[in-house]
Length: 224
Image 1 (spheres, helix red, strand yellow):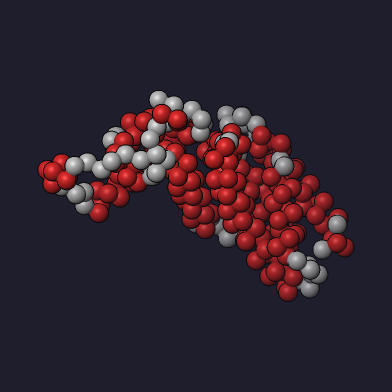
Image 2 (cartoon, rainbow, N blue to C red; image 1 turned 180 degrees about the horizontal axis):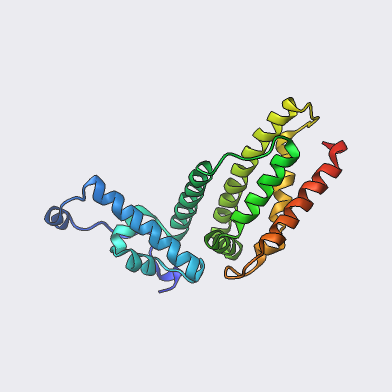
């Protein structure tokens, strides 16, 4: 079934059917929500936005299309929910990592640069990057929104670090957030980010690129 053939919404089951089946408990509803998001992630990452249908997601999740459309009006809404959920999950995982190392701003940024590049080579993260690049039409704003949220979380952390060391070391940084955004932008340009999800990028390559980004940033320190 093509996207054009899919209805924007489906009618709810007759009241008699609801009474016969009964409403799911809160725990059951949460389990269904989890299955739907997991199925959406699996289908979107495997087949891309264009190659995924609501039918396929419903089948993968083991729910009816009625159940799926009661939760999400269309494929774009489900894409947004799935992507936002993964960004939140990644944020929680990042907070559980060991505290950043380094007693100077330069050392701390080298640590962050290497950590971010290492994280960017995670198979799921790379697959999400490919999915974002492949989104088109009504899905494009969703992909850009999620990309902005993801980058924004990293910029928030770096801005805090730069503001902290600006006081600690007496470093002149006129706009810590802008400098953090420039730093993230340079890391995003790492060639390994565009490689196939299955490609292996060496630790040496990531460390070398991370150090180069920090060196370039500090070489322009007069412009901070």
